[in-house]
Length: 237
Image (cartoon, rainbow, N blue to C red; front, side, top):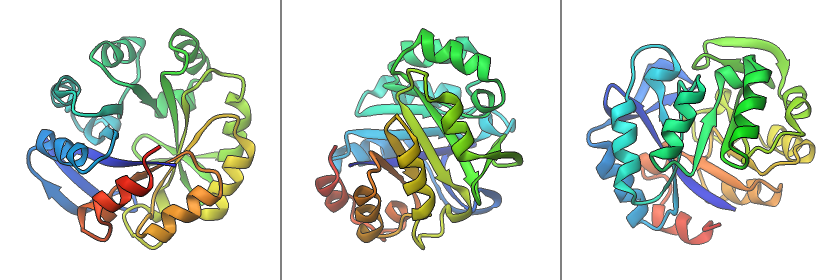
């Protein structure tokens, strides 16, 4: 399994939120480029970058995202507010290893089909989940769709993978939703990337045992609950 640090961007800073709630910001750090380099120096080969402002319509950190891509210290999977074909192409042309597609991809299946077929193996579908129901628009809208129905709907597409975030566990470091991740792995023909609630090496090992291909880690790395070098060494691929 591959461990991937999260670099969540808000107002030009790196932040960590609890439970997907903007009023519960627990971490705020300056200099996102320095932080991405820090994760690369710790041994991580890939970094997960999300523009939270763009995802929620509060603004944009696109120039900063491009700067991170051009810095080239690690492979980046990039998302947040990616809602047009031009957005996807621009990020790939700037060097993104994969583009994370969320709200529009979930709400507009035809658009997701066009993006996935135009860029096979380069689009990562993000399904943010609260108690098995998919949320969009930066966790602000809950759809009446179970995540497994989404997996079934996209199973024929040439996606790079499926990123499932347990929003109800996000930032709490009390363990991820293992039954959810296990069910998604069983249903998905793609590699599954898990996020939300990871707080220990035991959590990471439990995900690996259930067939998860990659884990995106935020709060536990930023608070020191996990030693980044230990994590990068044990979960390199």
